[in-house]
Image (cartoon, rainbow, N blue to C red; front, side, top):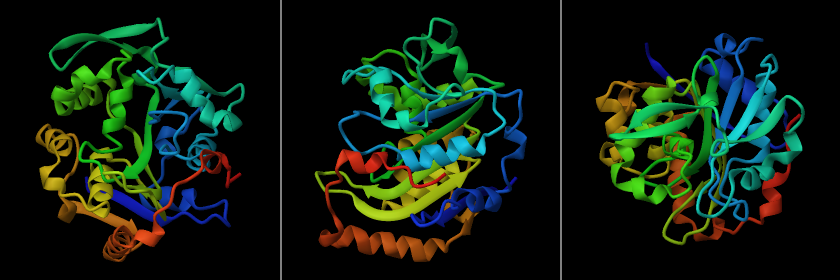
Length: 284
């Protein structure tokens, strides 16, 4: 099966930018039914920072799973605070069906062996539930979409696992049955080394999370051949990490790549983003 990754523009004037991306990758009809609940695993280090998937994008994901009996927007505790506190970023979309879920508070867990250790993972992470990983696009060698699996670990003191990160992430992926949909939020490109975010209004979507990570990392200016997390997943046959073998649909990859490269070089495009700006819901 050919791995497809859709690249589309985020249009603030339109409420219909996510559906075309899903259509480009063949749709998600097999994931949408009344019998499968959905876990939307967001990545948020701190609720006081803006570097997380926007309310806009998470709302779009939730709206496309309109048949699901339950949707959990999930995160775990970290040393900066409780998962539920950080999940309040998306409180505008919560209702009886769409609820925040702290993976660290779940008492109904399964024992799994991860990176050579016995760990307990929340029961909601496992199939038949649908698992959606959404994160920001960033210039970070450890990745975004796949690194987001780190938050499945309930222990708030996660730093001790950094030395075995590639193995740990791949083990989690295999234990829960994989990522069903990967949504990389490129509203901004988040750059490291103290450099500010760059507004890019780009969304990457795919069913192969490794392929989405690979395309996103390439746009962010990273050498995907030297990213240990991607290499570990590819070694295990968990996805496609070769850009030449990924079918990129929607916007031209070369055109978007050139636009990203120009933005990274243009200091005037960099700015700090007030947290309240990320809470603005732009789609129905």
